[in-house]
Each structure stands twice: as structure tokens, then as C-alpha cells.
Length: 356
Image (tube, rainbow, N blue to C red):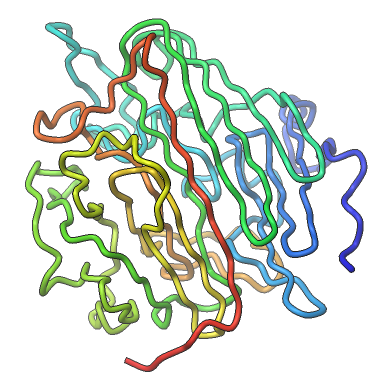
């Protein structure tokens, strides 16, 4: 029988390293059932902890900081919900009709994950919290980070027997782009590197990228590339030069999809220890990132390491930079057509571990 859930589920974080104003606002929310325990912050809707029960102990499934203060200035977006536009917006600008919209540029001349004060770097309002569900709300005002229109964004995070579901929605008062992503760094209980992890994914194409990480608009076949995850080869086998991966793969038939389909399994990750993750999503593609640039001197939870290639991100989302690519499915949201995304993570044990 698992330990009881904390009561109450919302707890004020008291920490000497936190700025006074942040210490007054920052809270964690603990969720737990017989198989999973999870900690969510009201800052960035961050998943700060996600552990799977394995016999008589807990195995961490994602990377996290030991010190709550680290999340306030985190450049790596550990566990955050990112947006309004996840990923990169080329030139930190786009056009709506004939009007040029200039955004906050926070990665050179581009915008990354919604800007300096994107959704992963603001305080959300707690709407509901109990032993297995958290509901958070954030109102992004018109002009915030350069985006037109007011957007009311809702996030529900709910534990199930062996997984967690993130339901995201947004309503707007005028046409504006929204494309959210959940930015967990998955380790599946491995405190080292991810070269032995295997990713299974039926993506047939990936987006070609420029040097700065923005898409060219061209979709290329994964066949013969290091982005071919169809046979479940390890990251080490696919990438023997250890270049790292930060690319967007496209799920079958996604080129003509609006992302409004029901959830389907889009990826499966298996670690050498037999732990597994199944990712179900209704989005047309996902960013796959092997944490090449993750390098922090800040303390991680337990025995984890915040080092390059110590985790992998699987981030279902709409097409990146779709606001500047007329050939990509639109990410524009309208007052009469709210934004919705659903993501379910299911954790498993005893997966078949194969050799390359």
C-alpha cells in the first residue's frame, strides 16, 4: 500500500534562496496514487517531479531541480508548459492579414518557447487541487511578449493508474496563434546518459532546419537518417558521432491534419533498465531533443545529473514556425474555435530490452 497523499495538496514553498516576492507566490501541488507520485508548481505549470513506484521504492521518470529557486531562472524549461508558441519563431515576427506582429526575441533574432516571459516563466492561478488532479489557469493579456489578443489558458493535470494526462485549452478574443508543448526531460530512472534508450516512433518525415533551428519549410523522409525511429534502435546506434538531436518529426498523414484527431500512440521510449514510456497525443508531430545543451551546476534531485544527453524530451505539438510557413497546418486560434491539446503519458516496467 502506498503512503497517503499529502494534506492539504497545496503547499507554500519556503526556501531561503527564493526572492521574497517569489516565495510568497510559489507553491507546489503533490499528487499521488498507488503507482505514481507527482509534484506540480504553479510557476510555469512545471512538472517538478514524476516518480513511478517500483517494488518498494520510487523511480524518478523525469529530471528535476533539488532547489525550487532554480526553476525561476531555468534556461532549459525543465518540466514546463511552453508557449504561446512552443519552439522557434523565425525572426521573432509573423503577419496576421497585412499586419506585421513583432514578438519578444529571446534567442538571437528568433523567439523560443513564447519569449522571455512565456507560459513556462509566469505564475499560474490554482483553480482546483486534490489527490489526483490539478487545474491551473493563466490569462495572457494582449501584447504580452508581442502576441495579439487576450488568451485564457487552462491546464488540467490528472493522474491515472499508471500515467498522467495533460489537457490544455485556450480561448481567445481575436485571432492569435497558439501552439503549446509540455517540456519534460525523461530519464526513466537512468542516472547517466540516454544513448542506450530506444525510441519507437512511426514518423515518416522530419522538418529540415536552418542553422538557427528554424524550419526551412521542407519535409524530408526519415529513411536513412538518424531520425528514423521506426525500428527502435538506440540513440547511440542512430547517432554514433554523438551529435545530439533537436528536430521535429511528423506523424503519418500529419501534413494534411489539423491536429484535431483523437489521441493515438505516437511514441514509445524504452530504457536499458526495462522502464518504458508510451506517449499518446492528438498533435501532428513532436520535437525530439536529446538535451545536448543541458549543462547546469545547480543541484538535481537525488542522484540525477543535469548534463548533456542525460535525458530526452518528446514534445508533441503543432508544426513549429507555422506562422511563417504557409505550407504547414495553421496554428491560428479564433474566438469561435478554441485551442485544445491532450497528452497522456503511460509508464511501464519490465519492457523487453534488446541489443542493437
